[in-house]
Length: 257
Image (cartoon, rainbow, N blue to C red; front, side):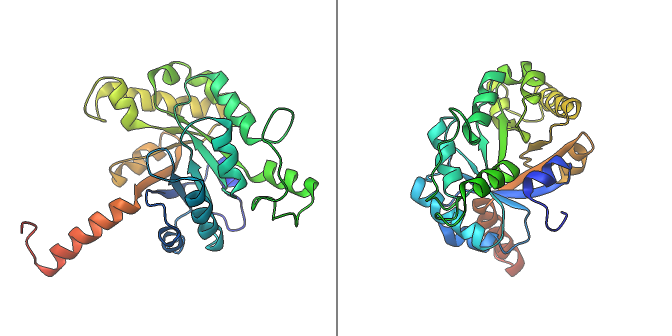
């Protein structure tokens, strides 16, 4: 990662970005993870119990630690996007973007302008009234990240249109949901792999970065070679489980009680 560049600029430059999901809605977890050298964190408000107060506290912890933080919002509803960004999140990951219209709506909801994101100078994002409107609008346009999660067959069929939407900073492959949607039980099923490759190819054609979650970190080079650059791998829950399991192995304790 290039020092001094924003996450938005790093994505646009195609730099490899490594982050993880946060499933526990507590600022201490974010505070610790912000010290690890990861390039970004993603609060999972879609699949974990993050309300606005928890998002607010966790974003504050990430910002204090100097770590960019995305929020995977519960839905594409404008109020969810507004809440995350007003709290000071670097950007949003919008789930289940199925069409070019939905992609455009997500970008619109994250940007200031006519019928777009509502303005409040009293938010953390705006510096609690300490920044001028001009400064905040300029900074928001330069730094806010909007990621469309592609996890439905409809989205795969429309991927070239979606990838071409102006203002979209990245595509993100929801491989598990794609697996379920295609009616298979293995993320390595040829139909799923073909869909992921199709998404990456569209990203390359349109100059749009592609990201993904991978169950096997060792697969990163394979997908990096196919144009993926944003990898949100593992989670705080996974680190707890794997750390405890490693402790048992290291001390010679059997895994069975």
